[in-house]
Amino acid sequence: MNYSISKLTLSILAFLFLSFYSNAQTELTSIEIESFQEQVFAKAEEVKNLQGTFIQTKHEEFLASPAESSGKFYYNTNNQLNWTYLEPFAMGILFTDGKLFLTENGKTREIDVSAYKMFDQLSELISKSINGKIIQQQDFEISYTKAGDFTKTILKPISQQQQLFSQIELYFNSDYLVEQIKLIEGEESYVLIRLNDLKVNQPIAESVFEVEK
Image (cartoon, rainbow, N blue to C red; front, side, top):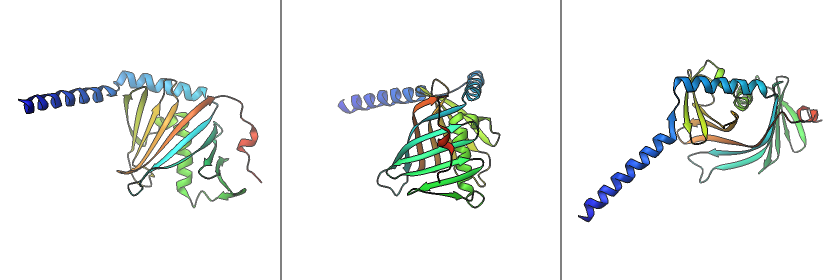
């Protein structure tokens, strides 16, 4: 009798869990997708610049715990992005005028983008993820779900050739800004970037996008 009760209890709990999960991850209808896209595109047009802080965690199967780093970022619609790591080490990455600059130990050097396609793709990906314009691209298969307080957008490259990531997940908040970016490389390998303290169209000093000398 006790076994039967226990089994019944487990069945009920399993049902409740699955019901909760299915509700937490609900696919958007075609009408909801159209409305969501319109809101994202409208927001992207409104955003002239964006700044905030970030926490980046790298997950690998061989790592005992995720590798975490943090810093601050500045972005504007002139295709300029300043991505600065502060912890656990200091390193600045600047994308401006189609060029990439890396600052370490007080020294700045230009990176040959043609020789480092990964950096070029990554800069474009980060910029378009921040402003939401990535969902306008035609080379991804895109699906949309409601995940708690976020709208989750899943992008899978139609062609895996020369792609850095097998899947990209963007989490949009209620203001239609991206708060989380998940870059999936493999089954157990991915990078999660959480954007915090977001400020839209607030003054940014011109020096932020200037190359240090």
